[in-house]
Each structure stands twice: as C-alpha cells, then as structure tokens.
Amino acid sequence: MLKAGKPGPVTVAKAYRLLRTICETAVADELIARNPCSVKGASVEHSPERPIATVATVAALEKSIEPRYRAMVSLAAWCGLRLGELLALTRDDIDMEAGTVRIDKAALELSSGERVIGPPKTQAGRRSVTIPPHVLAAIIEHLGEFTPLGPSGLVFVGTLAQPVRRASFYKSWSQATSAVGVAGLHFHDLRHTGATLAASVGASTRELMARLGHASPSAALRYQHATADRDRVIAEGLSGLADANHEVGRGVGRP
Image (cartoon, rainbow, N blue to C red; front, side, top):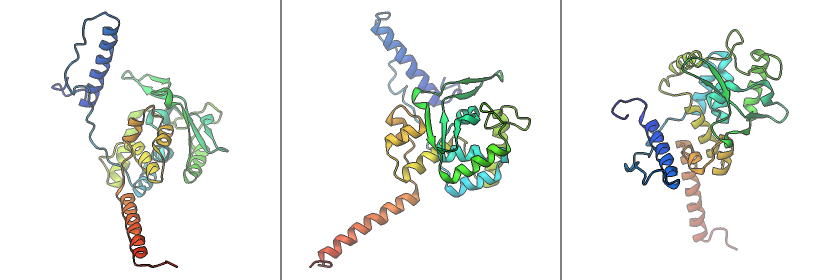
C-alpha cells in the first residue's frame, strides 16, 4: 500500500492498526493461534506538522471567501468544527440565547455523490460548543441572509438553497486562500488553529477534549502547539519572575 502511494501513509497506518486489533480479538477468541500483524512501527502514524493560521489570516479569509461561506470559516477557526459537522448543521442547532452550537451529526459525501447524514466520528463528538461573542454576530447575520426558515433548515446551503457540495466549497476555499497568500492552508487546519488559540488563552487538555469532541487526551494534545506570540509572552513572564527575585535579593521592598 505504501509503494502504491495511495492511500497516504497515515491512512495505511490506521488500517494496519485496525487489522492488528481485529487479529488480537481473533487470538483472544481462539480463532487463530497468534497475531500475524507483527511489523514493528507499522501502525504508528507520522503525521506531518500542519500550519496554523494567525488571527489576521482568519479575518482575511473571512473577507475573501464567498459570503455564504464566511460563517463556516468563523465556526471552524473559533469553535473547532469539522467540515462534515458544519455541513450538517441545522437552524435549531444554533442556540442564540445561550450562544452555543450543538454538534450531534455530520454530513458525508460518498464517491457516488450521495449525501449521507450520520453521527459524529465518536460519542465524544456529540457536544455543545460555546460560540465566541465576536463570532455570534456573524452567525446571526448569516442565518438571516442565507439559512432557510424553519428549525430543520440547513445553516449552510448553496446558491439554490441546496446542500453544499464539497467540490463547490473547496473551489471557493482555494480561491480565498490564494487571494490571501496561504494557498497551502487546508480547511481542516482551521480546526487546528481554533484548538491552538483556545490552548493559548488557557484551555486545559480536558477542556480542549470537550470543545473538539475528542475521546482521548492524546488526540487533544496534538492541537496544543504553542504559537510564537504566546511563547514570547511566556518568556517575558519568566523574565518578570527573575527581575522580581533580583529586586528582593537587593533588599527592595523589605521593611
């Protein structure tokens, strides 16, 4: 599979891990004598480091992308929603009074073009995420301009009020990223961005798990990457501690 080049190495590792787990169950059930999946490291994923967008880049993308998709960019970047979760949102999933968005389903698009609505990737994926106040105003505007009336109306629709096709969205996304000068940025990188921003303002691993819909700490930890700006704040804070200790050592502030 690796030599074929498709699927990618991360998917191959996941497939091998799944096969190994199946065989482990078969060994436990005494269906086979031993697990044949013994290639060391074959189930370990080596995902390349993905970029994160700056707050300024997110704002630029919101302005550059087709207006009907602006709120998608906002919810992905500031709430960490996946594309499938966004495309399945209905009007009644947005609680304007509480300022939250409920995620309990995801839209899949099969190779045949068929659109399927199913549950989130995991049980932990069923969650309610608080929308930052500065994003809420954009959501209200979007609902009034683009979302069909009625509780079951899809929040994001195409020009004829039909469900958004991924190909159509990705075309608009590609044009926006090129215009902003971040052509290599994937839409899913906005989820990474949102998680990193949340971590930078103090969100714990448990809080990130709840916000992102992850079932394990290891999954949430992948998104806790320090930004240069945040690291600079930490460095300045450390110098502040050193300076304070130096002043105390000199007797400053002693009675």
